Amino acid sequence: MRAIGPSAIIFVCCALSASNPTVLDTLGGMAAALADNNVAGFMKPIDPDMPDYGKLKNEISALLDQAVVASSIEVLKDEGDDAQRGVDLDWFLEIHPPAEIGPLAHRRQVVHCKLQRGKKEWRALSLSPVEFFAPVTFDKNTGK
Image (cartoon, rainbow, N blue to C red; front, top):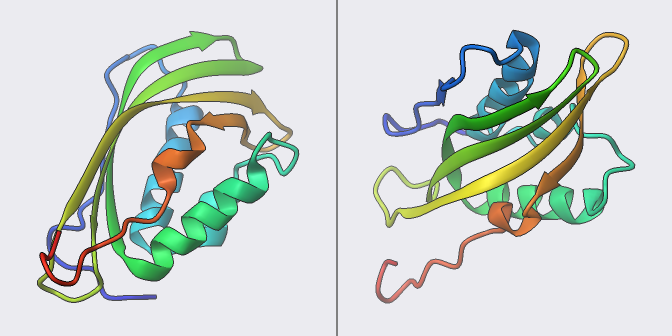
């Protein structure tokens, strides 16, 4: 595990009080795994049969190999029942090289996620766009 600088604080904001806490725990765990540089932790709640599962795992692996990531997630839409949920997330990423000082990259996008309750936990059946989690190319000359 890499040391995380002071700016790598995880915030999981829950805009809808009707959100199922276990769904929010799942999403918060994914955000925490990003900050902990934990690919397996991020991928754990994602169904391996999800479309683009392999691509997502490759994107997350490449991103965490090159950078320290902090996340902020806000639930914009939460629909469904106790068995299935569809959520739209305002997901913000702060990405920077592992050095204490370096260029920052910011990403913010609405990420759509469909979840289904398993026997013990919620599983993400889809997460899109997968490209949101792609690695960043930092220009060593400009620092951006």
